[in-house]
Image (tube, each protein chain N blue to C red):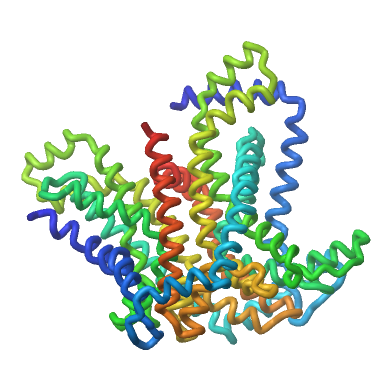
Length: 288
Length: 282
């Protein structure tokens, strides 16, 4: 592995030396990167301006003086922190429940023998072809009849049965060496012990990928919370933020501070876990 | 049956929230059904209404136009960024992070950054245009063409990161030996790109294309937030219309009927996608 890597780096170096346009290409790449970042950087700088600040010189936005007063105002006087908290709670619980139920189901399908196994698996696969957006109206009716509209449970429970999660974990569990499982069964290991002591720890990369996806999906989910949540105190960030921002049109500072408060936590998480996230996408994207 | 406790939690959630809505939707589409309760059985009336409803066709067209405008641009941009992000440079991590960063932001955040940047008179973009001598005041969100450009560009900026990463994975799977062999044969870099890189990326490219079409048919949030479907309904997508019929006009029955139409479009597309992936794997 290490050897392959170093040899490919060597040949890549050779290639770089032979590409006369390398410098130009890197420059274009950097310019595009800056274009991608400008709106985010602008948001962060605007949030540091005194409340009510406006300018017609675009460069002025980035110049001092800076103040953190807006952050105190946003955090103390609005519900935005509360909405961050709601999004966080919903995201974390959705992720944990998704992992538990998909892993259990995938384990049964991968490692246990029972009747109608094939049919049940195909039945689960069907879910891949059912887009949530197209069943959202009847889903609303069902959740309403269960009395779960305007509650955390109503936000979380409809999102946890992920067929993609089952498929990814099943293919991962299938790859666990037969000898490990046979020797565990010989030792009198129960199915449940086999599951959480042996198979689950081996599936960590797949679990991490599913966790990252489920969490980002939940964190950004707009349509379902938009329909099912009515009280301001239960809003998630994507639903609450527009309500707050719409009150402003030409006043830039407070809305951008609100956006920054909503974004800084995920940006930090992203910068810490960048490698895992990128790996997770290629993993689930190709398998899925 | 030892498997039951393992299967049951997923099975129940799946049955109630994924499978049951399909049948519930069918039932609702055959009724007059308000937000509060089921009213009268109307048979196929809702379906008849749908086929003659100009708003349905208009919004379905808008959604299709969105798919047509964003899909090819998305695939090309994603490939281009993946090539940049795959270059051997000390800035590699920076480039990858920068291209991907917008993808992790909430749709609410990106929408409102854009709304505020595009304000007429004092917005960041227009003041830049003024500074470089373009004095025309552009009303980005109230002009039909500009509103569409905005929606497309924002969508590309916000979501291209995921597709770029998929292409990146594809690029890294191309065996180095192919390039080495072609170098011995004296191939130019452009020839290498055309005859090695592109064909090798075809499989993942096709997956991205289909996933992209599927995802774009579900467009809703960024359009609702940025243009509200305007000006004059020019950018309103089908899901927004379904939402308005159901929740503003208090007509869940008809909303469910149109959801069924969307369901069938997406179903056909995802069957095509699964078929394509199947042939890819074998």
